[in-house]
Length: 212
Image (tube, rainbow, N blue to C red; front, side, top):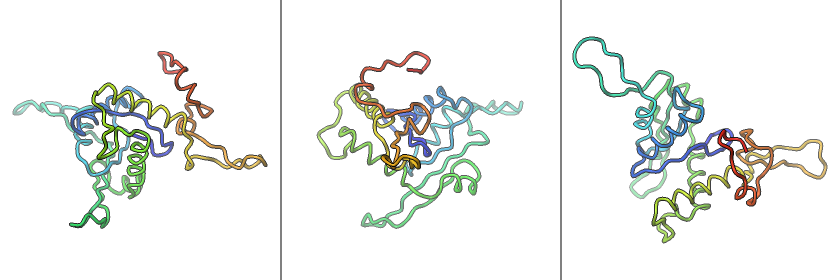
């Protein structure tokens, strides 16, 4: 999962289904600053994310005193989740997108997220470029889950801290030698003040409280 403003990858999950992987993601987010409700979320049309939200953040309704007590968790007020589903014809040609607001006020959610799959598609492409284990129809797949998780962790680490993004650069108005200041997602999110080298990534040890 990435933050739309800073492009920071904030959580990842692994599982046999998208629901299982999404549950891991929302559990991580719950521990890292979203304890009460899931953050506003937009995804493609694959299912499972709404079920994961309910599993991690949902609550069982209070018993009214009549009939059987409720046992299933339900979504809560204030959630915002939208799916952008690409529509294709029988030949696989792109026709357009179908906007599905799963949770929240439809007008507010549409304004918040817009109606583009650019962030989702760009993120998937970047992941496959960085990590050959995610490339489709390739022999570079992971034979062991632990090795797959390690490769994904290293990719996220470099993406967040070591790779500047052109879309995040800012103009330097009073420097004649340098027109742009390059920034990584972690710099944009205020987590660091410089682009990390590979040596820093490999030798810096985080402290238990999350500081370095």
